[in-house]
Image 1: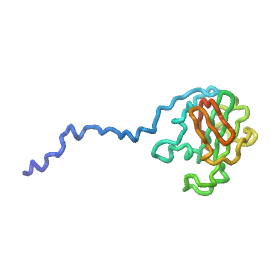
Image 2 (image 1 turned 90 degrees about the vertical axis):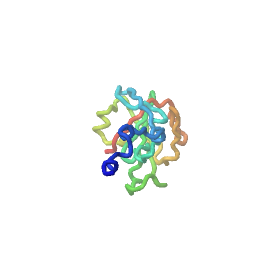
Image 3 (image 1 turned 90 degrees about the horizontal axis):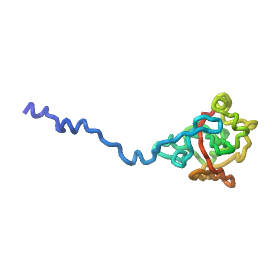
Length: 168
């Protein structure tokens, strides 16, 4: 009886068997493709699954990332900056409330704004480097498409790539 009580209930094979991950945990993830931007630097290729809010973790949402990062979108001819209005920020403990707004700007002379320039200068850019298109846009006004973004009357078509930079 003493030896029988020490015998494990499961076989050695069952104990070592790997349990597969749940399918639902992998539904939102997709391999990201990378491409070169107009400054010949590596950025993430734009696609709706890559940019959209995804996953179970709130910190994986694009809307959450914009709390401490700035999003840059690049087309064939232009680069756009999407940043949160820092003056609206009053409390770190909320996701987005009614007063959370964003600024959409077109970057001037973006061919000269490589990663080194972005890391050395304050992000989001000051008015000398960008032309503000919309100063106050609610997150719900962003309509993301397969290769485009529609915000009010601004339609950004043929988006090629995007990148996030930390706010300084």
